[in-house]
Image (cartoon, rainbow, N blue to C red):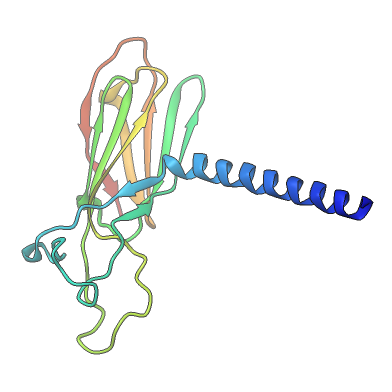
Length: 168
């Protein structure tokens, strides 16, 4: 009977641990999970009516990012591989950073087939809340090796503007 009690206790601990780990993963991924809206065929990405064999891409993907803050500024880094800097649109508001983009589908080959398709294509946007107002006129953005870096100096007053992305 003692062995059965030990086994039950061990299973309960394992179950709680899995639950805690799953909750932690869900919390970490919730901000990075981004919806990609498919584009029309004339924009080199199929619309939502395409068949799975034609274009079985995901509609959701993770755009991992970091938000660093010190006394003077915020620094946001977003991993957005496969884009050109002109595919990105950045808007700064008093308490929000909004990054929009468009990832276009490129056909690998006219023969053969994909066995796994996990990449998402289409337009997307991410809204990143800021805990303090920023100087939108002094904000800068750069894109290099698939990483978008945005630096936002802090201020006491709120303002907003669009940013131009610099890059290689």
